[in-house]
Image (cartoon, rainbow, N blue to C red; front, side, top):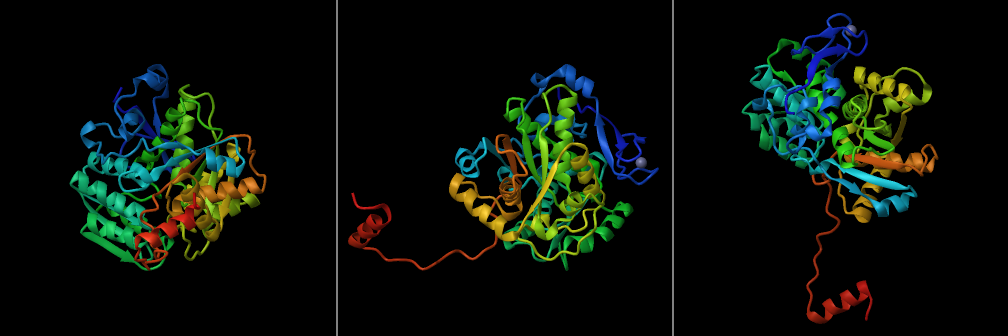
Length: 408
Ligand SMILES: [Zn+2]
């Protein structure tokens, strides 16, 4: 089965139905739209009907109808790593790591770039655009180049040097913007209406959003169609969290998995608008934020997607937590030393939040946890620990090895 089972768009607020087309919000109430699939057909087909590898293995649950538009750089089917030593250190029964740094540009964003750029082709656009703190910019630029499209990339002025280099390498139209994501996104979202470029942003485009559902399909398939009890997902505006929750819900509705995992929303404390609202039971109050090491989570005004995250948390017994920058950096070091996985601060905030929620006894350690690590650590910008070299002769080398490893 490789045909798309997408049938229509539905408003998440009023339920109004739209035919499949490039529509970004509900014409009746301006609510966000989500794609609806023929899940009865999926139920009848069963998991044995999946074909191919990588993200497009799940093409029936993605909205790109023509295989010619299914752009790829080899994204998806990232490793789901057992982490027994880290599980022991955290005192949990089982821990797995969904390492999104293994995607072609080192980020979970490659999933949405594949469907965003695929949709740009589907709807006949020649130019894509995105406002980015770094990862989305290079990912959209790379996928646009791959598809032969031009990309207009707006990048955060404090994005790490490796992220800026990556963006400059993959697009001729890189623009550095002043301030944080929140400062530009509202006006950029209004420019989308002019249709000079295809919306590859995180605010509204359901086709773009859709690619990230595949992370749930993979976690389920890699777990033998019995997903972990708890999945911890990062939340900036909420794309990964919402997409993962929807992906699991679709599989459950199609009878492919016995239950959906409990979802944990993880934020940086310096950009924790959703977590605050969850704790107080109120609506989201936008925050004016500064810098956090978790650059990709630096959004203080998560907008309607943030409200959607909150709704999913409240309706489905979710949990929300945040972590300070120093705890995120400590989790990054621990992960590298204990399991050999080098994730960036944006990617490892989920682990820091899990550690905190376990310490606060907000989660049952007897459960089976899966942490989404959304980016590689290889785009991190920092001074190397030392560049002072030592000139050895054999005696001094022997002495050092004996000191470090102990004399026999
Ligand atoms: Zn509506």
